[in-house]
Image (cartoon, rainbow, N blue to C red; front, side, top):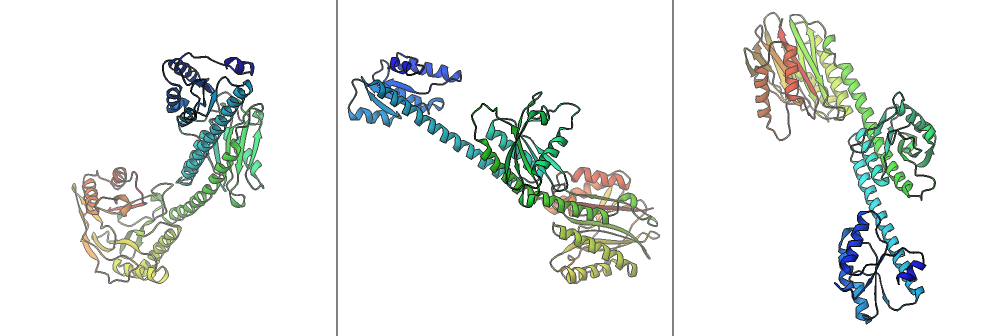
Length: 514
């Protein structure tokens, strides 16, 4: 049989026993040159051919090795059935015609190759499915690009780079996990690549593949010091927005087609579709933050307030967080200084615009009447009339710098904190939310002494899921009581202690009599 197969062009290795065969298989497997088919005599000297087949099929590295049993003695139908039952692909009765031997080997090889291709296709489809799920679950454009690059690298087994280009020209470059981009010094590789990708994607619909010669592609973009040809899979989102480019080294021209293009095209399409809403959300957030920052004066641009010093802070939760409606205000009035800290309930662009309306309504109303109770009632009616689906919390404090008299109206907000002599106490001021139309209590009145500090914050500073609000308030009071002198120092200390990892925006105002 060996002579027949050698004459047919096969390389044949003989083994005299089952254990010798297992040893040969293991050596070749470790060297990366596994056998393509095993022809096994049923009557081996140390074990049956059926047992050898069972062991080969039970080992992960050789489970796909096709086995052809042969025998001159065990030729009954039961022997053939047993050989097939333990995983053999065929059974030869010897002596056999040379043409039959060659045909059986070819059939076993063909079947193994077909199974291997099917298993590889299934494996790659599973990778594609996992990658698309990860891409669709991305929370921002950068995470999306990295997830797509990881999927492309797993599909091709090569380095991969994914570029997501936003409508305003912003670029998110994704790389597989644990890989950094190494490019030649002095070259603006990203700018070159983005310009090329934008030009190739401009005015074209549908996903397509482009091979860019290494002379036009930045050196080292895939492998350090290498000038690879680049295979680009370009996928525009609907209406041509948000082009996505999946870039990998192009396979050599003489190499067999690995069939990656179709899978990479599907990954690129999924990435483009997932990128569109993420980038639109970032645009919406940018607009909302611009609104918030433009209508909330910076600390350095606060109006000069008679008789009081004021420090404010505004901290968005993160670039990925939802928009909040937090605000602060410090306004000179006929009877002193009106301060306010509030929060429109909800996280959206609409909530941010409602916040702006409330703040402007407060500025307008306090010109005629700066009483905190009256202002709270009027803001309540504004929400009921114009935004009945919204509620808001606000704490208003009117400070008379000459006497230290402070009148406080609280509408569902955290109570203000008075800090003095290493101690801190909350003001007993409470009331219903704005927007509910409920009766409002009489404002609380306190006396603020020289040197004492009045602190007003939104709940984004201390509110934590799973933690009772009373516990968080107690911790805030303890930290504030131990804060060094100064308003800016107090604000910065509280942000340092509480602000990390917060899921909500933070507004803060601290005041003391000059």
